[in-house]
Image: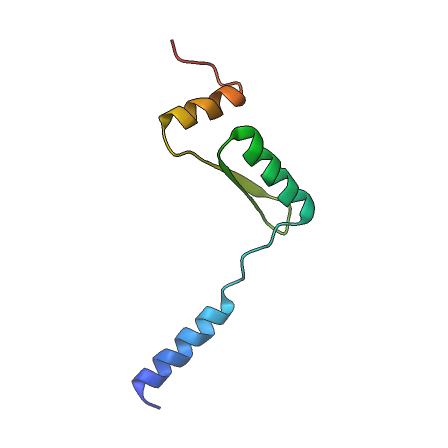
Length: 78
């Protein structure tokens, strides 16, 4: 087998091992959309099969960040 063919086969096998991105269930999707509306910015909820996850809050500028911090009750710097 030529070296190039071996590399292609190895690469294909490796790409098949990559797990597809987990799709949010309807409850998590509804929660994510509600958070987006309430925070007035992009919010991404990521979950794993064992119930763990993360919440990503994206902001476009410092004013938007200030709004997010106010909504979650973060104390303002003096």
